[in-house]
Length: 212
Image (cartoon, rainbow, N blue to C red):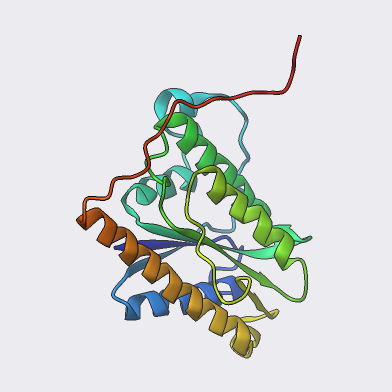
């Protein structure tokens, strides 16, 4: 079993990475394979609603979004980490997740994310974490992904990695998250081994609340 941890910070080895590493180390102790992917510090453009993903299954822009999607197809669980900017996720990870989740929905029937456990991790100096936490979790719930919780909201505090390492409760929360993710993954594996099928899907119904 493998968990992808996406680092949405412009700093490769900053506070967000420090939090994700605490989760990853816990997962490794439970024999879960991990990979931390840094999305980089170059601009990631947003979705332009061109519809290419509906035809090809991939986003029209050939960048890290499609790279992560290919890795996601082989992953069993996900942790998306981001610093908090103006009480929201970073601009780059927001653009990435908009395109990643939309292209997956339109392009190939949600093979990469459907019913795979996921969690958000937030890093902040002080506040804005719960608003960003809510923002990231919405991507998971619209894709029918089980949201993995911890003992508290998944956040750490500090302006640099050494300060995050002083956040005892934050690091504790990351370790609990890793253990809960492990439990969820092993429960799903046990279910598959017992022949329990995924929920039966019915045809999608969409309404826009506009009536003539």
